[in-house]
Length: 502
Image (cartoon, rainbow, N blue to C red; front, top):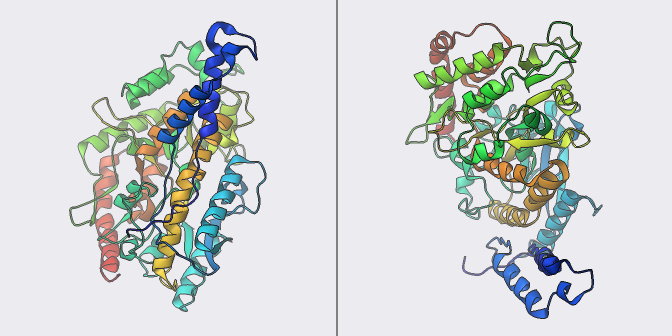
C-alpha cells in the first residue's frame, strides 16, 4: 500500500521541555525564578527539536479513506473466577479514570475507532466455557467474534481443529512490523501455519513472563555485588545465583528447622524447573527447516541443566518450594507474601507478581532468569501457558482483510500508548522501585520463549518435567527414554492435523 493514514500518536514532548527547564535551574544553584533558571526560547526550541527527532511514533499502513461504517469489532477473552486480578485489562476501557494503563487503552481505542469508524467491544468467558463456545460457534458457521483468547493451557485442541484462520493467509497483516512479537510468530507456527500470536495490543502475556526479584536490603546485608551489572556483563548464571543464596537462610523462630516463619535464600515453586530450563537455552520441542516440530530435549546439556535444578530443589534449607507444602497450610500466594514480608533473598515470579507486591515495604529489584553459563549470548524468559492466552481469529469472520487492518491499527497504536504505559509507568515507576529494573524488564521481554512442548505438552513430558520439582525421583535420562516414543507419536498426530489445514 502506497498511501497511509497515520493514526493519532503519542509524543512525550513535555518531559523533554521540563528536562531543559530543570537543567537550567541546576546551574549555579539559583533560587526559583532567577534569570539563570529560566529556559530561553532558544533552549525550549532546541528541546522541541530534540523531542521531534526522538519521538516514538508508530503508524499502521491504512489505505486513505478507509471507513468501516461503524463496524463492531468484537473481542472474546478467557477469565478464571479465582483470578480476579488477572481479568483482562488491555482490550477495552469504559472511560478515562486517571489510571495510566486504563487511560492508555481508552485513548488507543478512541483513536482507532475514530480513524476507521468502528466500535470496539469485549466479552469475558470462563475457562470451562470459552473453548467450547468458540468451537460451537465456528462449527455452526456463526460469525460471533473477530478475535478470541483461549488460555494457552486449554487451546491446543482448538488450534488443530481448523476453527482458526492462518495468520499467514491474511494479506493485511504484516509480521515485519515491530508491534508483533516475532518470537511468537517464529516459535508458534507448525508446518508454516500460525493460528495464535502475541502483539503489543496486550499486556496479559507480558504479565505471564518469567523473571526473578531480589530483596535489596538483604543484598546489602550479605554484601552481594551489583546484580544489575552482573546481568549487563553476561555473568548472571545459574551456578552464580546458587552460590549467592546458599547459606542465606535464617531459622528466625529458633525451632531448629526451616518453616513458614523463617528466611530463605530462594522462594520458589515447581515452575522454576521450566523457567530455568528455558533460561539455559533449552527447549522441549524445536522445529526443523520445514517448520515441523521434534523432541529436542534429549541431550547431555539438558540433562546437566536438569541435574542442577534437582540440586537446587533438594536444598531445603535455602530453597522454599511452595508446591511441596500442605495446601491446608500454604495458600497459592504464600510464597509471594513471604517475599513481601522480607523472608527471601530471591523470588521466582511471573511479572504480574510485581503488581501484587505493590503495597509491600520490602524494597526489591527485578532480574531476568539466569543463563546456563557465560558463553550463552542471551537471557531467555518463559511465557507461562497457565496465566495467559494469545490472539486467534475464527475462520468465520466475514472479512479477514478488514480484521487484519483493524488489528494492525490497534497494535501500532498500542505500541505508541499501551506499551509505554505498561513499561514506563506501571512497571518501572509505579510498582518496581528503581530505574534499573526497567532496564532488566527490557531484557526479560527481548527473548521470550513459547515452547510448543509446554503448550501442547506432547506426551505429557513438559508437565511431568515441571512436576519433578515436588518429588524425589531425579532420573531424568530414564524418564526421557520412556517418553520419547510417546512424545513422537503425539507430535506426529498434531502435524498430520495441521497438514489438512489451510
